[in-house]
Length: 263
Image (cartoon, rainbow, N blue to C red; front, side, top):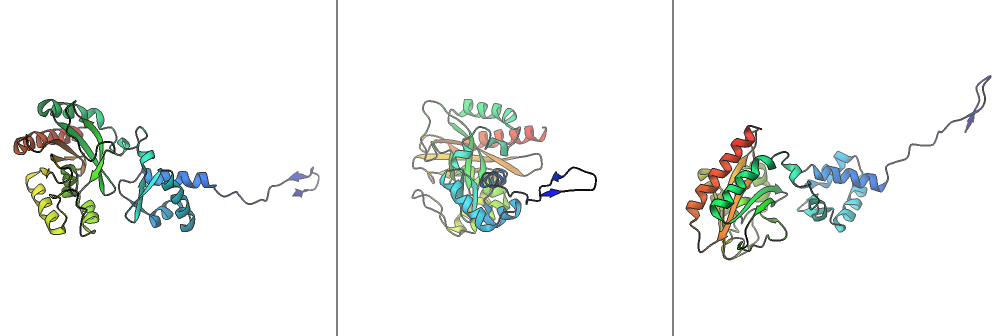
């Protein structure tokens, strides 16, 4: 509209309403909220953090899930396969630790000659952010996806045993998927197993996730004293003394924790 002040040339003023964010901007807001999360984020939480209406957020999440930029986990959402496969996305959850951690992973591989895994929690799963192995690696269900359930893997049990909130979220399910005939599927059975992990500082999985594969893992603690990762070794179930392997894994995990403390 034109406005005129006495003695002045008419000027154009813009009284149009400020444009609202478009779908692209709203999608970016949701992705940023998801990328900062280590556990599933509910729709209500996303709406609070982004300021989006529930119907709008739900519609955009549907598109993001279809494009594998987000994924549904229980009643919440996490970054999807495509987003997590981008360089730096997953490792950013454990910032600045790779240089401190990698020498110990290499040493553990050299001493065991078995597959070495470093895992972080990703929703209600263990996400492998580093894996070292040779030509004769033992095959596992996690090959190619670098992700595995918490309840039936050694790395997952180590994370559960020392993270009360994560454990509470998983145990709320009450029962767990059977992957092999050895998988612990009851709440009471898993609770007993996690108590042993806390007592001894080492977690075991003996053909619970993949037939023929045994794993040992130990917790890695960050500067604040909270568990941030778990370190594990996977080996053929029939040929490796798990007790001796557990000593090596626990020692390496303790050394990594000490290195992180000094960062």
